[in-house]
Amino acid sequence: MLSQAPRVMEPKTATTLYWTLTLPFAAFMLFGGVSEVIHHPSGQEIMQHLGYPEHVLTVLGIGKLLGAVALVQPWFRTVKEWAYAGFTFNLLGACAARYAAHDGFWLVASPLLFLAFMLASCALWRRVRPQQFGSGTAHVAVASSLGTVAA
Image (cartoon, rainbow, N blue to C red):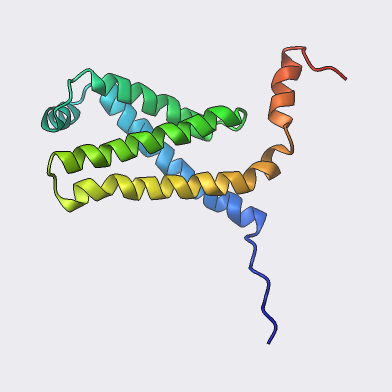
């Protein structure tokens, strides 16, 4: 019996799935960032419960706002990679903080569920990225707009 070649996801399917995962994740981070920047009472309560000072809300909120924008922008690959890395640290830190505070299973595990969605988004982005940009198109476009591209 001959083995079949592994199925490759169609580019359109990968792109649709990428945006289906990325947009809700980015929206969740955006809304969470706004809530943290304005120091919503629920956020203050959580920070107090976890033993963090209240000003940490501002730092986390600004990071989430910038990261959410970075995930949906198509031009700067490195910025998007840093956003994925930052959200990874944020979500792993949230999981560790909840565990250290002896919170229940779902409060400890819920950041890991968001991390799984984010990692799937990242993997799909790496798959669809060449179709969106070609090889280095974004970098050439930025350099071209600055007038620094040599022929």
